[in-house]
Length: 435
Image (tube, rainbow, N blue to C red; front, side, top):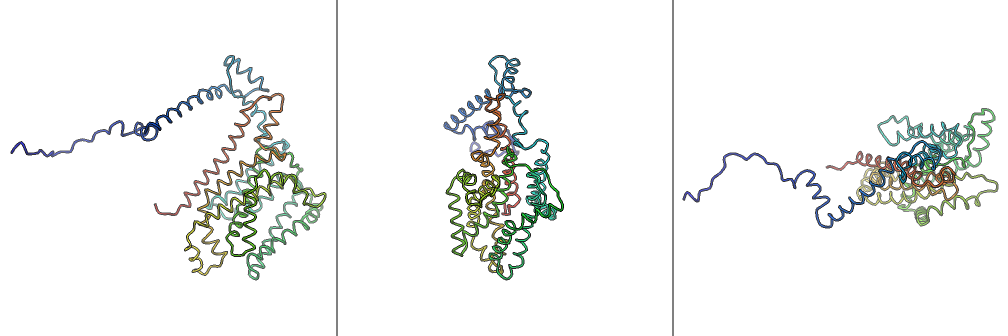
């Protein structure tokens, strides 16, 4: 009987360390890199590629030269310092030509103007991107487009001021007529009134005021724009204008009105079915044929208009996806509250649809900003191809290859990475589901 009795321990054993294979770095490596034969082979091949790249890139970066007047001088310095056959990056090109990458051929004594416009842009965007700032700052956001245009292109200060009054005319006509004629018809009449102001009254009125109060800056031609100045002007303007246009197109595509829906669908499908480079050639070559004789329509403005149309078509489809993701109960709740169409869209539908669409919208914006390099095909000096070609055509830097593209690519990455991080922050802030 005593042999069948079991002993029951009356004290707990002290905790022991987990096996090495089940804790720490070893566990992570086993689960993520060496969990099976195929993963092990892929991990080894990946490590070999990384080591090969590091063995070639790190010495190239460590042998960099920042002070030289030509590519030949860079190579001489590298050979004298690191020995014959050594290679290294010649960042002296960036040190000498950085201003062309940033400002193109903008007059050097006027760099303060695009620099001021660039930093004021963040002040104007702040109340739009962050809602905890004073709402009064939105007034500066409203006048910033006219201020930036005047700083960049110069000329009479009254031209952009009178142009902005066109939006005041549009808003005034819309406010007066919306209760009588409804929102769509009032908006259309307001747009016609603003177009009449811009096409007929703006020029004579601005000239008359300038003759009395001649306030202005030295004019700068559009062919002097280039580099990241050009990309930011086109990208920021197109992004700002394409979002509201895409929103209206998305609503128009879902409208019950046959004419509105047909026009919206036709516009979206046509623009999405045509490459951007085709639209840029249209802006550069064909658009001028549809204008009155001797009309000088700025090439940058033409490009901005076509790029805005292109981006708006894609934004419309992204927002339409957000609208389709909303359950039908949201629309029924708006009807139960007695809200009209525009109140329901503004208060209930659009806030939720836009929150869902944030990743797609920001992805479209990032793609649009990178596509601004395509303006090189219509004769504008973009930072990637246009300015790099100008730099490499200089006899002093003939033969340089990687450094110009790496420099331009690094700036593009910083801008696009910033937009991506803001998108992620906005998604986390607007996340309202229960976790």
